[in-house]
Length: 148
Image 1: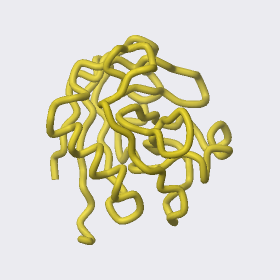
Image 2: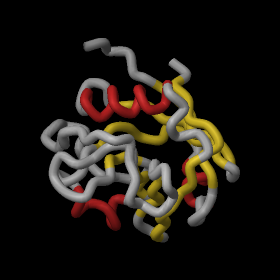
Image 3: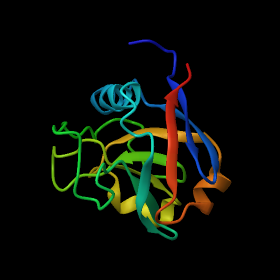
Image 4: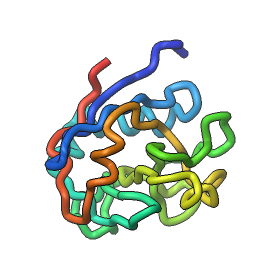
């Protein structure tokens, strides 16, 4: 695998968040995310679940938290970067190996440390944490793109 990190942006109605993906630590989740981004799957989806001091969740095509892309991926929870911290992007799921398109972004370590080893961390915000803090339920991901 390349030492080059995949970078991208999540453009919301509140502003832009920049991220880098954990290509070397969660290759299944990263490949899945890239596939969905390249197809435009995330564009126009809402943040359907927002819990202050915990996380914001998105990626559900029906906007209610029960939808997905039509397939599931394996969890990858053993790598060195599998730490839920502020700005970490992690796969949502309804049980082991049931993730698909829904993901959440962590507000802080204190509120999300119990998710280590349970959910796959696949990336982290590198800029735009103030936008993360401003996201409310119903806010829109206008466009998600891979930039490098």
